[in-house]
Structure formats: C-alpha cells, structure tokens
Image (cartoon, rainbow, N blue to C red; front, side, top):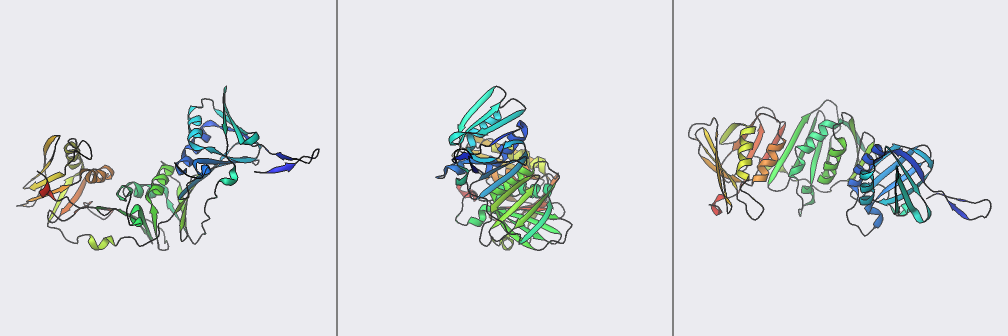
Length: 388
C-alpha cells in the first residue's frame, strides 16, 4: 500500500483508497472473480478479493486460489488510489444486497473498509494487500485467438466427463488439442469418454494442453453469451485466457493424457439411427426409480427387432418403457448403463438424431452424429448379472 511523509510532522501518512462506481458493474466483477477465491485456506488473503484503485480511473479486482486466478478492471471515479483485500463471501453478500445505482468504497485506519449504497453503510475489516499473491506470469511461448462461442461449446459438450478425483491427475482435466484448421477437446474418467471436434479457419501451430475441469467450467461462465474472441497464451505450466475484459490464468496439468484412441472400437455389430428426444425421454423416465446412490440400479436396454425396451429395477420399484426404432433383422442385445452417464450425453447433444453403436453386452456404447465426426461419446456398460 502506498504511503507518503507528512511535511509537518515527518510521520508516515496513509493514502486511503476511495472510489465510486456503478453498482451493477462492480457486482458483476465481484461475482466472477469470486469464483477463483479459495473456499478454505490457511492464508486468509486467499479467501478474499484483491481490490486496487488507480487514480487513472481503473479499479482492478482479482481472485486467486493458486490453481486458478481471475482478474478484471472496471471504470470508477477514483478519489484516492490504494489496495486492500476483502473477505469474498461477505463482499459478495453486500454487493447482492445493494439497491442504489452507485457504490462507494473507502479504506480507513487499520484497513477498516466502508462500503456505502444509498443510506446503507457497511464497515468491514480489510486484509493487507501485500499478503495477496500475484497471478503467475505466463510467458508468451504460444498464443492463438479463437471464437469464444466455439470454445464454450466444446467445454459444455465434454467437461462433465472429466474425473472429479483420480490417481491420474490428467483425468481431472480436458485435453485441448489445437491443429491447423481443427480443434478437439477430450475428457475421460476411466468409464466414459467425451470428445468434441471443430473445424476452424486458421493455420494454427500445433499445441496440446491439459486444462483442469474447474478452470474450463469457470471460463465457460465468463464467456457467457459473448461473441468476442478469446485469446489463449500458453506456457509450459500455465495458460492465460483473455475474453471481454476478463483474464483467467490456470495451472496446466502435467503428464501424458490417456491414449484413448486405441480403446475406441473401429467396427460395430449393431448401429442404430435413434431420435435423441425418444431415447433421452425414455432414460429420464426410467431414472425416476433411482432415488439416490443407495437406491439405484442400471438402465437396461434390450434391443430386439424394431424396438428398444428401456427398463430399471431398484428396491423402490421398477420402470418399463419401449421405443420403436428401425433395427437390422434379428437384432438381439441386452446391455446396461449407469443412468447419469447416458443422461449427461443426451443433455448436451443438440442434434435430432444420433448413431448408437454397439458390439457385445460387455463392450462400450459409442455415440456419434449420423454423419461426420463433430463429437464422439463412449460409455462403458455395467455387467448385468448382479442385477435382477
């Protein structure tokens, strides 16, 4: 925090921070940067939002949990520059409750911070900004500019398949593979694979990076409905994403991503052109009998001539449903799946029809578009002999 010496007494005189800004602008910035704030840390500053006011009229806000950092700057009427860290949870609550169009924020003695909105005044303790870690520097070894909406769609269609916990940390992220004229994003957790492929104009240099799932989810939220481009700067251990006035810096996951191509079947015994709404609705109905993790059972698909029977039996009861479908003559396959793995896929596919590709009951299901390779999902089945 900056300081100056008083001409009269020679004592250090603190330059208290003070600014006024638009409530909605500040609230939006606070909500977004708070997503990078640590929920629990031995370092109190990491549970806060860093705020720095510059007399040029910019206020910088930053969250940083040492894995992911989010930063933005907003316009403000700055009377006096300075910096402070405020408890994120409390700051978010105060901003959500503010009703007037303008907010004023001012630091005082011992970093006590006053936030005013109309007649409401909040006095909350601040934390010394020197305790807040800087975001890691990302050397510009590689940079590329991509349409933000394309990147967001890739995240939404794949990130759900990344592992939440795993002995192999690479499975807790998605592989973003950039090639000349083509992007692909792949996530897997040992039970399923989700891949989205996009053709794009541009002679991009080749680059692979494994991005933590949390970072991708937060990036998608920042992108929102933006039509802007996103700039990606990648170094050996970190990547920086810049979009619409926000900057997200994330640690990259070190290691070799699973060689998933070798486990995807190259031929199938049974391929069905299926209406997405029909199969999705039937699986949803069958899942109603699965009350929780203790009362669950597999979704069973019994494929015969011109029909898919979708059923589920748990201790809560049973469900039986049927879908009319064109099948090859003599079709006969019974296979089971964890319901959420099916529902996750059906919830992100926007096509009216998909290809569902099977081999035997112990082999994975592969889902692709009817034509092309825009996406691919592979789901391992559940062995049915232990279920009624």
